[in-house]
Image (cartoon, rainbow, N blue to C red; front, side, top):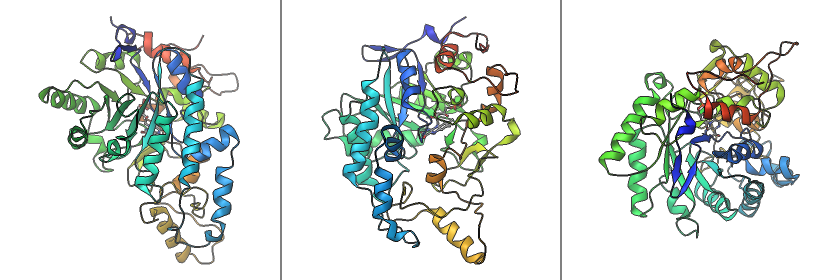
Amino acid sequence: MKRVDDFRLRFGNKELVPIVLGGMGVDISTAELALECARLGGVGHISDAMVPSVSDRRFHTKFIANKTKLYKYNVESSDKSLIHFDLGQLAEATRMHVGRTMEAKRGDGMIFVNCMEKLTMNGPRETLRVRLASALDAGVDGITLSAGLHLGSFGLMEDHPRFRDAKLGIIVSSVRALQLFLRKSARLERLPDYVVVEGPLAGGHLGFGIDDWAKYDLRTIVTEVQAHLAAEQLDIPVIPAGGVFTGSDAVSYLETGSAAVQVATRFTVTQECGLPAKVKQEYFRAREEDIEVNTISPTGYPMRMLKNSPAIGAGGRPNCEAYGYLLDASGNCSYIDAYNREVLAHPDAKKISVMDKTCLCTHMRAYDCWTCGHYTYRLKDTTHRNDDGSYRVLSAEHVFQDYQFSTDHRIALPA
Ligand SMILES: Cc1cc2nc3c(=O)[nH]c(=O)nc-3n(C[C@H](O)[C@H](O)[C@H](O)COP(=O)(O)O)c2cc1C
């Protein structure tokens, strides 16, 4: 019976354990967690979502305080179009987060950064260009483009000296999205080095509609993507993601031509994961009926989360002066509209509730939008219970090696 360790992910001459820790913003897949996966021979993703804020926490910089001070005058205004990111500071924060992670890397694995296009930051092209270039400047091994079609993203990097040597990949949820991307990248004579195919059971934002996500399944999409690449005679590693919960799930993909698997949910309950200890217990406790896919994210993508996430129904004032990562090219965000509508409807209320949208920046930063994969309800079966009823948090090494060496859909409990 095969184990994940019988397979290797190959990038040129480099061979890796075919386990990729998916990016989990905002700093849920911490440098510490990604570094463990790299140390063990796989690929670990950090995320560049809200990187100035992550830098403030990690390195005690003052990016958020400075930006808030600069735009304080605008707090009462519903027009956020004047709020812009200082591109120099964005570059500095990215270089610090990525660069320090790369300096700490040990072992044979790789560190990639997850870069979401939907973080439009009231200046989609300029800010994305800076994020991509600074991650490359800081020596990241690779960049995974996510949450968007990224039709212009390779073009934004094409003049960078590392454009052809760094590993660059894209997350898609359909053959169609892949076709569009490949058509664009062919023009630059630069194909992606890997394609992550993310199905509907993943955590975070989903690349499917709210009404039809359940009709899709990962295996079918992976088969379609493999058939398309074969027909085009393109030899690009395919990496399925979303609902790969056991080593045996992973093997079933590796045996049918996938190059690796991307996993995340099992790592949300590890010591190295950025979620606060209390939140990890919420993930452990969750039952299947406690998880939903909803449309409260202002990005427009459906998102999976625990139903008891404090972010659901919260009605705080939009915090774009401090954050503003979801402001579109004209400075709008659908949470601002939803919030203003509720304020108008309840002029005398001290506290309002907004049910249809959430201030995602605020709540992701505070770790109270509890996004998670579909199989979160199985996490309780991956550990022991302590005497007080809480669940024992795992080490990233334990989870990684369980994927790597387990067979028969067994999940090793911690010693
Ligand atoms: C808590 C959490 C946060 C996530 N955040 C992101 C993100 O910021 N960007 C992204 O592209 N994918 C994100 N994902 C998706 C993962 O990177 C990964 O592709 C997927 O969850 C794998 O499926 P699994 O969780 O069933 O193992 C997130 C997943 C989880 C569980």
